[in-house]
Length: 124
Image 1 (spheres, one colour):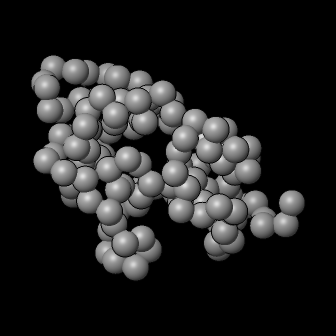
Image 2 (cartoon, helix red, strand yellow):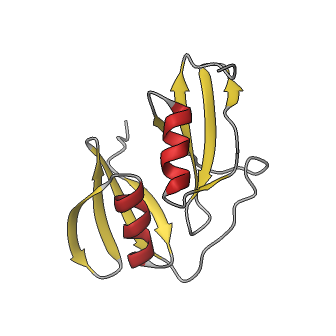
Image 3 (cartoon, helix red, strand yellow):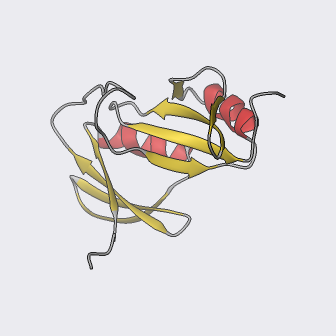
């Protein structure tokens, strides 16, 4: 059976990608052997930044796509912290889902990720 070994994020500007994923989301550079490929680590998960020619705006959530979900303890606090760092949120407020609450963010290249608080509710 195939085994997931790395998650790849296609980005059009490596410096901007490193700023977003490392400075804002807390990833760490694991390996930087190639100009157009940088391996990051996030809580033991390997993420490969791969340079592409141009960004692409995904029509979230209306089209087929891959979305990476990040578990957070306090979604509202995380949203406030990331908004202060300039992270673009698709949802301005937490959204209810079957497992708790979530909010989607967009990286500078159009990739969409979700922050999920398991067991959370939209009522404060």
